[in-house]
Image: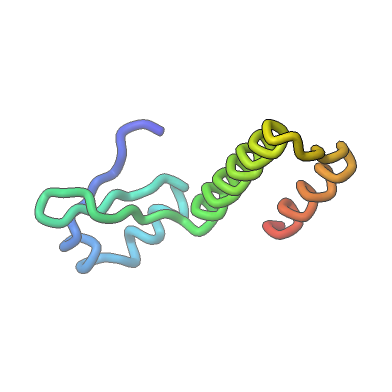
Length: 92
């Protein structure tokens, strides 16, 4: 990821459009500070959606592990593929 871009909230107020354009073009987050402390992160919508997809996938994997540990029946490969196709189709 490299060195993060960090800007004070006053820069966001002064030139929000430029910062939004930067996140969209670079696909890298911009960290916003207030009184010297990180308070927010500005992401492009594409990167935000990717992050949400990653979290959903990790939660599904964790849930599956818990189900298996408790003796619950797992999913067939076909069932898993159908669920993955649905997630992918949602973001095309």
